[in-house]
Image (cartoon, rainbow, N blue to C red):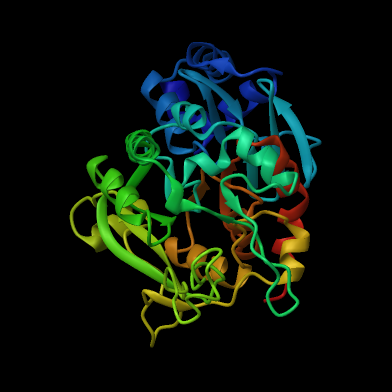
Length: 378
């Protein structure tokens, strides 16, 4: 270490990196960052610059591509909350400590630094077919397609439901391959001990679960969301009068959320000290975090704020989101953000959260919905 470097105050390398990135309108390469830091503070060890970038990504810096970095949006001068900006031809919504990218999650994951995500809470398109463009066009036109448009119940209009029972064997195989690849891409981005909590349904959870285990994540059980939905319970179609006492499928009264974890380093307490994760935050000192959570269906006023067919209620999402950061520190990611319920829950708690949503229609909905959902008093 040079004499000049020893006399510098603590954090001078980080501050120099910030100055270099602020001076550039575009993301810049690691080599250019090192050269800029050297110009500002003199000769420094290259590994020190790289360590600061790695340890502070994505809290302060973002990796736009391999070896190319930029300053996080909220660190840029003049940027206000609830603002959409363009970076690398990609729309980004910023709200406090929350960022939502209009991006494909696979491409976005490829750009992130290893060991940069502390938890994942997500409700993915676990029946991929229903989110294909042609099916979304039918859904938004009220024609259904693979989506079932149920009749009104007790005068209440019910939300569309995907027909998971009609998925073909090739579509189910595609689903398993999709989540295996997603799990493999996600695994190195997680810090040791990071939990991955994934919404599923009783018909497809075994496929998603198998894929995530094969990807290298360790299964840690399930969270049961106790909720009465409108799925199932119907009599045979076009024969309900002939078979009035028959339900084709049980009425759904629960929803499984799969729990996986990246293997910890050492003991749980060692992992908590180093990486800040590895367990779940207790609701109180007297009560452990449980795997059964009672939940009402998503309220109509929340659906008006965030019209998405799979929207989950804030009362439930805030419990999950709070639990996955046991010390309240770190980054939560939602790679399938939809209307932004996870990001809104994290924002309400003051947590850092980043998400991606591929569909521009739902991205636009989420940009409006996140601040409004986060402001709800639950």
